Length: 174
Image 1 (cartoon, rainbow, N blue to C red):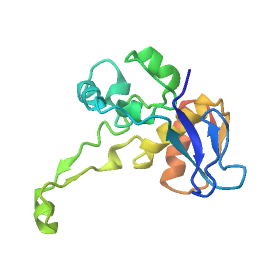
Image 2: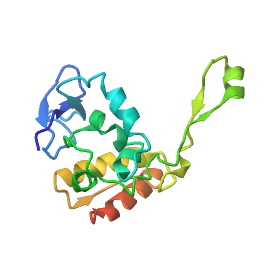
Image 3: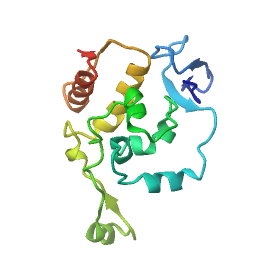
Image 4: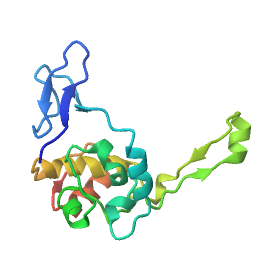
């Protein structure tokens, strides 16, 4: 699969770049990497995201993460087909974000002086943590580069989420 994404050093004076398929946590000079895209997303994606909302028969269209997969598309998924999506994308039956609906907070909005404030409780995610959204994408990348084991230095939300997603994909987690 061709990718429009790459890994780029976050240090402004460095800027080293690497293919998305490389297994790295830092550049050759020891700086952290971030995912960057070669082209900006199309403004027509708003229509795609709206039409995809609550779409039946494809959990990847319900998920708070994968519904917007074109913006996180290091796997270059260019289909709505569930079977094709499930070959590449990691999800727990689309639960990430699906149950965490935003709520309009009119009284809080008035109190802080904002006209339109919405809050989204992330405790309904599969591990009960807001970390599930990011971990779904992290384990998807691990799957893409054929990682057999991930390591997580956390005693809380991150480790619970990492262990859950790794187990779902038969990837070891320490």
